[in-house]
Length: 428
Ligand code: PMP
Image (cartoon, rainbow, N blue to C red):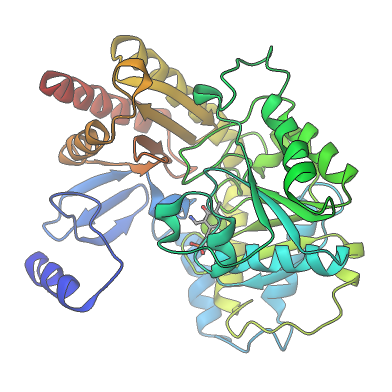
């Protein structure tokens, strides 16, 4: 099927799928850090299927696991424990912070967050939940209600009992303050929100360590310690949504929240966990799990093929020291982008951790510049580099390559980014 035919069938038979580029790309093949389109053009992939392809497209070690599993046992449902499911659960108990030990598997980040909130509600016997402005948590009604930006919800927000605190957006501080003299005013907002808008008895506070779709908004040091202190004070549980920040993405640690030294009561993930195989995961402490007596069924949750893909992905991350690599190579990339920022005023902010880097595009006085961002993404694509987009105003470029990229890939990407910045500077 050629490109024109794919695009024609898309517009006739698909809904809810928009083309990322004005001149859409039809991708047909992936190999390591590269993607290939229907005309066999090669692209360096620095978006990784929205932070999903952690260890490169069609990674041979992950695919070997998948093939072996497909030929052995493809599916039975969560009604039965399987060998890959218990193997993965054991491994996850070892690599997660604190006392997280009991896993439940589903098929997406949305379901993982649903399960997390349910666990917190059953354990505490309460229903109210605090989430954060600019946060994204998925597509069910609960997850959309937790999500705090109306265009990402596409409609009304029917689930009551959810309130959104200000986020830790230092570049655009909601309180007009500057770190550290702000004394973490944004974290303290959580307490004010609980006191003023809830019954005072919350089930949970749920947060992404670094807000993903929101544009890689990265809280300052000390932030989550303060948030967790407040959650505890009000008798709730702290849920870390690691859908984007898990699996070494942020460098140094396997999970993003560890940068703040906080041990959550519940953690969720999906995306990069199985290198592209559908998966969702919720983990909690034995104490919280104990309160959850009911049988929960997810027909496809814990699918042996996805479990094996996750085991393979984790193996590659650990054997190839990719958490360290994400930190090292991420620093190179961050430094290179910060250097470009000096000569390109449209680059307002460069932020993130490890290989999760956001570049916020602005005009004068920090005015968000979504059109410039779109032009920049077209310019990088034309030169063979695929990047992501995010942010409330669609003006944040998300730079998220596979965890196994090399310094020379960083050099190649920075060259394209610089040329593209120059190209769009001329058009301003
Ligand atoms: N939480 C976060 C932080 C996410 O980024 C996403 C997806 N972008 C989700 C939850 C929902 O995951 P999914 O699309 O797999 O349902």
